[in-house]
Image 1: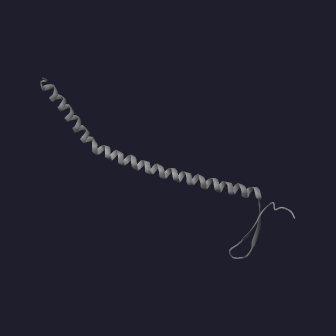
Image 2: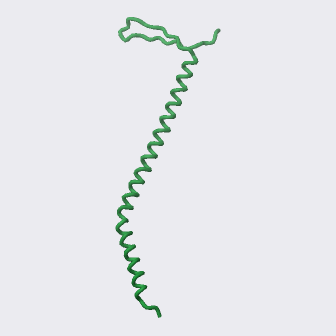
Image 3: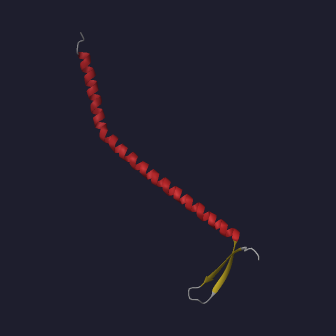
Length: 94
């Protein structure tokens, strides 16, 4: 008994008028399967990376908004520190 050298595919038209017999070499099916597997894994990796980047981007935006809210408070604290330093300079030490 001989070993099969490839896959045999029968393509039948939808109206049933004819069938076509196609022989596909074994190496081409292995190449196609490899391409499909590598393509699927690459797609999964890219989607995972994209999801991670979106999450990090939303965290950066939230941090930026938080810092924008704190900016007036930070400026006021700096003014108060300067004022306290000015009071210490005016107060005589005993």
